Length: 280
Image (cartoon, rainbow, N blue to C red; front, side):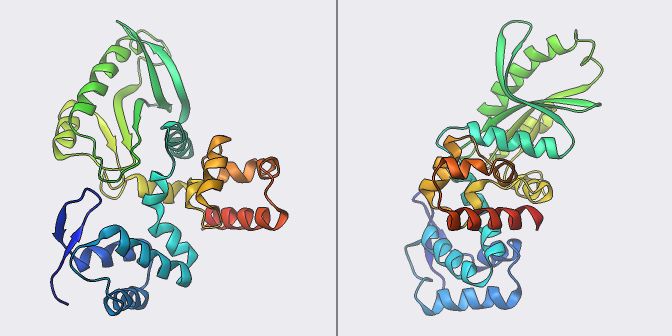
């Protein structure tokens, strides 16, 4: 295959890396014969050419995966599904809270806490018997928008103020605490370096390696409703407007589908897919 340039979502050009495409397909669970079939189709139908966008290649690969396996297609689309949780950052906060709850933490969303100097509204507080995290959620609706070092600098200063109050709380003072940032995209290297130096924790799509957001979603089965293939974009937004963020939540509150006037056949299709997603 000849070398060619693709256009990223930022508008920048870069050399297309076939290995990167194959890896993303494999990470989604596509087997070697399927990966080969997708690559051959893209090459034969003219998708491997100069100045094509990465979005066009992704969209066609997703369409082919959807025909082969809906489970693999959902996993391939997961990152895109997180971007669809907007426009506000609240659904992402709920998702992060539920992921940590499923990991055994007690969580609170949108709590106002008094620091030593001023009060702070904290996106998510997660704690167990040994530790407590002050989690700042940074949601982006563009995957090229990364969190730079100014974010952990800001969050660390807030944490230090809050931690002074936690030190005087008899229920919290013996727990290990730290500032924590969760994002649906990525961190720049200087943000990662600063967090490591200052004792903060970071969670992004693929960081920490092997324990990033993608891995935690699959481990806890807290899948966003935006991953459901049976929903249109408008229907996803209608559910988000009703504060239905993840598939387990939808299964627990199925009456919302009646309230939104989904047809019987449509409700059955949505519920069946949500059950499949939560039991994989």
